[in-house]
Length: 141
Image 1 (cartoon, rainbow, N blue to C red):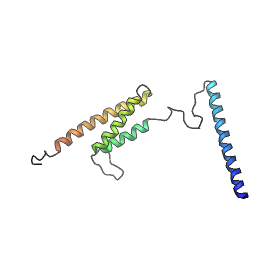
Image 2: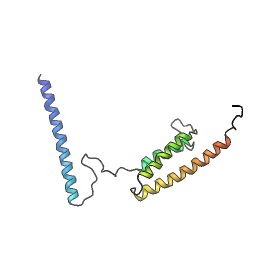
Image 3: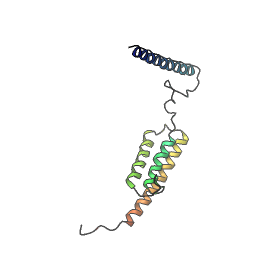
Image 4: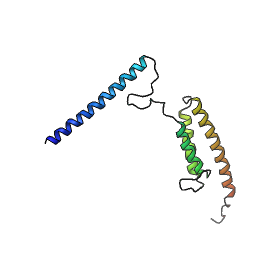
């Protein structure tokens, strides 16, 4: 019975400490706003909304597209053509571009625009090459 009571007491202490830390962070954020200091953390201790870097996300999706286009090897070291995967990754980047229009910083906008242009060009060229290399349809089928 005492062990259970001690556990409850310890849980309460941990919860109280978390609340105390959260209040301190909120007070610090409010003070920084009053003083005009840019926030580098939010009330939960993480980066404020919009501060999470997007370029690594663009690069991840770009790498997936490049794998699908056979331009870079996959994790096993193999290269293969998967136009569906490439198109999906390009579509994801296009969606991000549309949904963040006017809200990206200059570098993010430039990286995304250049990446999409390069990926779309590569996709078009590889798709055309794949169509030419494909055997003609069987007229008897």
